[in-house]
Image (cartoon, rainbow, N blue to C red; front, side):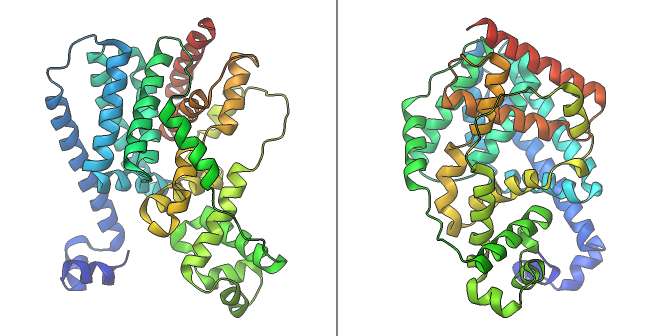
Length: 373
């Protein structure tokens, strides 16, 4: 985004932008505030629409509400959902946006306290908010409307079963979607050494600076080759983006080596969540990849893989917590993946007491699952 592009879109002179906002940075901050205000309006409307919801409806009632609200949020407020996700990415690179992302966090925490309280499950409000945050991001990725919506229902009903201490079998819709994702994974062309080095450089740039930083010139400098060589191997910007994302995708989904699972201790988790700057760059690249797939039709081939093949490494972590013999399904792994992803996003930079409280809640949830085995 640039002042010139905004001028073309709004049909207003560029000088108007600087007159009203002072700088593009201040305009970005104002846009975030606007998006947050609109999200509050949406949430108040949804709470009013659900006014007649039976009190203390329990886990199944909450699960159905979760599916409806995720679908409504990403359909009715798609632009706001993207703004929310972009705010989190901005906070990774600029501490000026930490206050904005904290406002989003507090907003959703309050919303889910109300929703879960109505279901008689207030103790699971924070965990449900985490699941909502991560799952809503994935639901921004459009693949097949009917399958995506049905699979979302199965996912959320699975979360409801978790809240009563039960692991869940994978439903027919999610199983079908996962099998389609495995069968339709795009083949990556074999690259020569130079092309592979350029692709790796492109992926590094996306990890560090996001999609906006990905240019032929920047990749050539990073790969230590000429601009001509880069352009010869990847002629268009779309070719370069696809090369970067192919490499990132391979890095994220490379086969896991069989090895004993050692649970991460609490002190390590707290240290990892202390601030945005301490986060591994690849975590931001994951979100860049998800948003790009959700926005760019040229990357649609990645949609089923991003939505339905997640949870491979999370399954190992969950097995470490429940025991190696626990009957963990692909749906259980996906639920746990969303839960810990949302928790991580919600706790980066938060006070240590809040982090401890969240980890305690997670321990109680896992203990309930373990007791149900």
